Length: 277
Image (cartoon, rainbow, N blue to C red; front, side, top):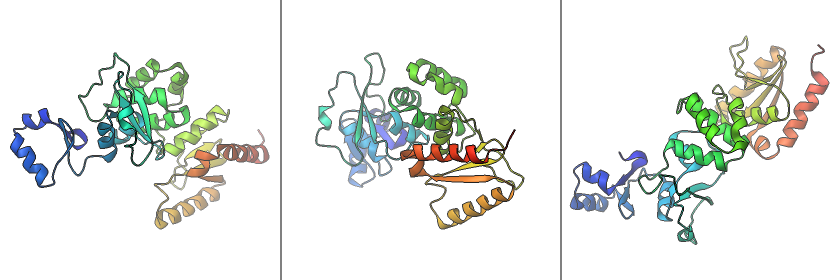
């Protein structure tokens, strides 16, 4: 009840609240009216409030972020509208990130029974919406964080569009960051076989390995944001090189927006430095 600090009138009444107590809580600032029949608190996610106020519900990548999945920060706010809705209510009322509109199928039981799409409905939306290299990162994170079983996730992928069915073979719950999943998947699509999370003699684990000589490090925004994190990362790279590795480091923005450069660099290093079999 009250998942994501979103409460229906029915839920509040079931807890013993009355019209008077709800109004009193609003007057005290502990609660606010989102739309008719729904209430939030200061902890309610703003994008969920936006979605409800423009006539839909938060879904797809935006819902998956709230459920705990890794989601790229720049994919917009995904709002699912009922199949009969036109989405015109959102015109001129959008705030913040751009709104990506979805329309639920007539057979979907989405309705207005929730404020944020349940996990499996959000996954089904994402399978239809996100490009494969972003989708694999989201799906890996669901497995890594034990938010869904692998069997259940594979079943959902199998029911999704044919274009995503191949992702079943690329799921990797060991991947610890979305950007790592993205570079691993794109390298696989380019025909470069890799391994992930290989433990070295120093105790360090590598992000991505090509053979036993080349390590590719994907610098995610989160893990390298502080000075301490930046320093620790540089020390770690030196330890890897002392064990005989060539180390290539790529920043988040380079991987996301200039992968052609990343791929060309990796191919060049493999061509020049790969051990002779």
